[in-house]
Image 1 (tube, one colour):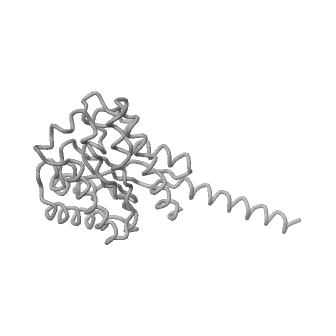
Image 2 (tube, helix red, strand yellow):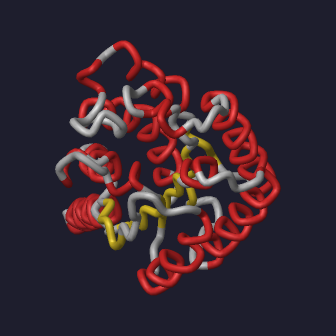
Length: 226
């Protein structure tokens, strides 16, 4: 009888431990620009917020500890203004989606790579697990009604594709995962409901499409920590 009680107690403790582990808070920092702060949509429609709710359904208790992203910011402004906030937040997991404004402002590919490499390195320094950083590619804003106005005679799709190759190459170098939203962002060209009222940024519906690509990679990264 005593042996059976002991076995039941051990089982109860094991289940309790598993439940506690599943609910352990994972602090999440989202770094980027307008695409991460969700220009033109409500807070609960931003893809980082959608990601948090989706992961909670999988018993991964993600909590946003900071999202200092600002519309229009470049990699240099991330270095100057967002990294200090990021460092103070002490995150367990982070995402980085940056680069569109570098391209718009004619930052060279070489300078973009240099800044991106520095940001990745600095973000990894704050993570206990260096692989708990997920990179996200730059969407193709040429697919929006207002997007072409920012081309200044350049090929937006080609230019952003080149920047995305840099993101992917730096991810490989650091053994990081990349959520590639570039192709799916191009569907904004044929569906007005995927574009926000400003004619330039994604709508909540489009952000939800991005999250579908980001989610399985984030889940894979964080499931290994459970």
